[in-house]
Image 1: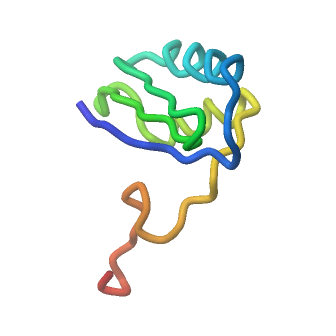
Image 2: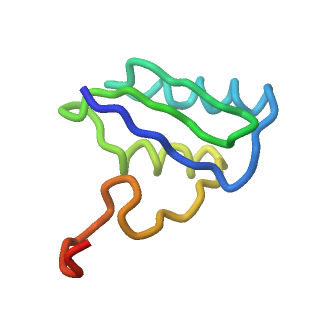
Length: 84
């Protein structure tokens, strides 16, 4: 089981939050979705043997949800070559 937090490009209203929750809950392996509308964050618990963070990001983007661009070192995105 893995937990990740994704940052949205902008805040969501309640209707948008319901859509995001429905989209993510439809992905096999997702067990819990929490959305902080004002903070523009999505907290996801999922089985990383069944789905991946990249698949979840892609699913959201296909549903029209704009995610904040991942910065170096965020969400585990680091190649390690800089020693950071």
